[in-house]
Length: 235
Image (tube, rainbow, N blue to C red; front, top):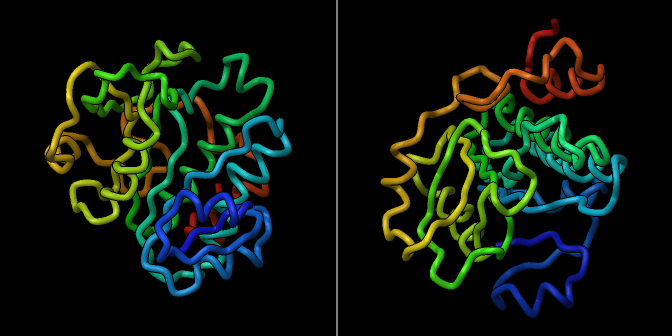
C-alpha cells in the first residue's frame, strides 16, 4: 500500500504501519509519477475545498489527469471519489468554484481511459446519525439541494466502499451516489453493486446522468486531454 499525502507525519498516525508514504502535492506531475509507479490500483480521495476555481481545476481535475498520464497506458484499477450533485452546474457552489464541473471532467477522463473503474459520489461526510449506516446506492445524480438533505454518509463507509470496489467484478464500470439510511450496514456490497446499471461503453458521462455539459462547449485543453488519455476522436 502506497499513499501520496501532503503531511506524512499526520498520515502516519492514521494509516497502517506497513503503508509506504510519499509526501507531495497532487498538482506535481513528478510526485504523481512516483506514486503510480508499479501500482495495480489507485484510489482517488483528493479535493480542493476552499481553493476556488483555480484549485478545482488544478486539484480535482489536474490530479486525475496527471495520474492517468503517468500510467502511460499501464493497467490499473481505478476508484475515484467525486461528490453527490456533481452534475449540478447551476447551483451557487458550482458557480463560485466550478468544483462540480472539474470533478465531472475528471470522471470523464477515467471513463475515457479504458481502465477498469468505479466512480463513487458520496453524500455529506459524517452527517449521519449513529443508527444511519444502511447503504443506499443511487444513480442519475438527481439529489441536488446542495445540503445534507441530498444524503449523508460516514467517512469510514466511503473508504470501505472505495477499497472494496477494487476487487469486486460487480463494481467495474459503475458510477453511483453513495448515501446512508437508518439501519445497519449490509454485509454484501457485491449484491448492491450488481443491481446497478453500468455506464455505457464509450460514453463520457455516467448512465442516467443529465446531458447538460456538451462536449462541443468544453475547453480545448480538456478535449486534448481526452484525446491523449483515451484516444477520443476530435469533434
